Image: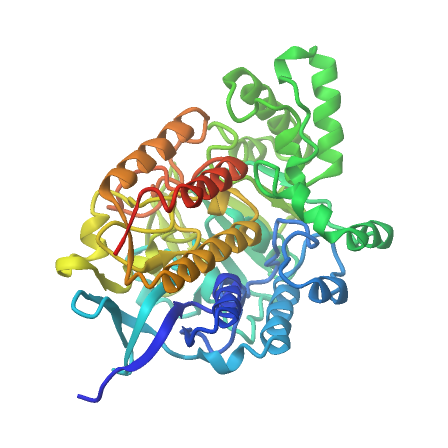
Length: 532
């Protein structure tokens, strides 16, 4: 067997995290290689090409901050960037900083084993190529492994079936077709209004209704853009002090929903509803902690659903009965209004579950539905799915799957004991999906870069989190989650959408305290890690 190609750093994934990690590794003068299974950069924005795909973070914030000229030159047309716009931006970044030569496209990592004798990671790709690196950095993304439901008869369907995260690049022609969409999470909420405008008939199969707030997307305000560009450092520094690392948090009303009267409460809710976007969830400072305030917020949103949706029975099916905020907060572009269309039918599959896909459509427990196209908006095996798809083995040959058999455990969301020199960008146990992902990614990449520099300069061979630090960190993540209402329902935050997946709240609530902890760890000589 030929010897493995040698690198200082191997990065898995060429999305937002992988591109920035490659840029920083090069700054250190390290020989780095990115392994990417797609044919181009973009990560989640390469794969999620379904109609209506759009980010739910403001454009000025969902972008890199590491290069001032890049910030000044790029122009975003709308408040919330669409998938094609974000992909174009990431392609521009890859070209502008000449990152493509460091990326192996159309390449899948099958296995990664830690060689204790050499303190190196040895990787095997799908075509049998062997690679070796001192540091292995997983930039595989939190929402990148599609959850494909195991529905009987899917192979028998006469038409196309596509998951929203694996949509055909050439698109699908919905005109005059009978379309079924399974799932009403974030992707479903985005794709359903767009398909409804084109399809002859759209049938939406809903397991649980969705809390969603109107986005109020609009062209960017040139004056607001100019103000941000005049002081980008100040703008970035400010949003990083906010709970979610974004400006939606900056407008939080710092008092309880129960501290004002019913009319004033309704006025504030209405004001935020009309403003649109995630700031609605910050109408008051205790919506996510105080059951009374949460109930009042939920009642307001349900009143809006009943006001928008004309058919009372459909409106009630669309009204959630679980805690607002315990699932991902969603913003929409005409979602509830879609159900007033005569060509849209809502089917409650919690009452009558899907039994099978048939050659001509789909069968539930009480009816058959004729369909030409099926769209699976069924989400992801979040946080851990992409990592566990790779056969990762640390000290003593222990697999990451074995280590995480009872749920993901690590230290700071960055390292797993028993897996030296392996870093996970925005891994479970970090703010990740509960924050502006670009802000969290940059913080993680910068921390990892500084850590590698520290190791190289001091001639250490490896860094590895301790079991004690891991146990304390997992307990902390759980304690923070339990102090909110986030754990009060089943959600993909807990892994509840994947049959057989261990239950456990995976992300960490609160970005600024997390950053403080990471800085404290470094200040104490990488407390909780063993450097050898």
